Length: 420
Image (cartoon, rainbow, N blue to C red; front, side):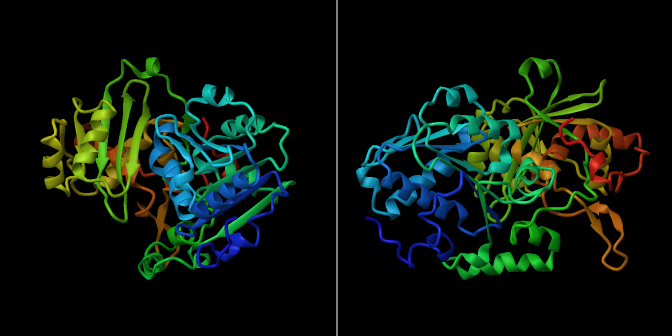
């Protein structure tokens, strides 16, 4: 029996931890609210309560599971004093509890493997905004075992109202058989003061970003820099003959490093985003290995010129990389260039999609009018795309782009199409 001690659990989860009355439990809110920690514990306790329970934990991409969901479940089992009694299969990403209940970890980028799993009793969708509505419907069909109290848990930080989670769970009020729980960093009594101050500091910068990132509110659809793009699976054969491009934006503690790869069709004016890797805390040798693992080491990567030392260290790992040429107004020139193309983003590039749904123009504080400058948030992948297209943008700039930046062309949300 695990004691629900107040020095281990947050208050907001304790009051509901044994309640399984709804099919869907939707947990959303701001960063550092402990959503993933507390919901993972609830699922562990439920799996211990019902022997031989089969729990499926999913994210969009299989490769992201090891350092996220799989590591988190192991960590929580250890904190609850259960890990030493469990059977952990690191190669197949499975964890069997002492009572025979089992946790399975799968990516939605291989749906056939998920379809082959029978007898699923509970499903946890981590970072639910990464998935598509079709992914969700597929998972909901899998939850048909005869066991009692079958549930699906969804966890996410809200982004744009264009994302399917807003349309499905919030647009027309709370759906039936659903419980929705909103939390922020203010609900996490275990949060350290440094993190609290860091989140509070966001108020002094881009307040809209503070509302989304810290307070967990859905972002507006108004004044997006790239209001239209197509999101779907991109087949290798579809783009195989097109020239590659790849870019790298550096980050570390507060911001992630972002590598983005794609193809460009100059004749038909289409930019394809096919690969991404976004992560905080990466050292340069790890970044180099990511580029190698993705198969981009021989093609030239253009990286942020603000970090020449990092570029040189990556180059010494046999990665073809050089600094991008920025110049005056390089951000606007890059945006102008990209706006001339149709954007097609592989649905597995969820961070790029998230940014496109939230990358907005700045407002003048005195006039409240939008200006020709984007907000400095939700732009790590987009910056990497601009860097990757460096040689094309530079060439276009040399012959002078005359088109104006498109600000506010889609004020009516109904006119937008995010899915092509």
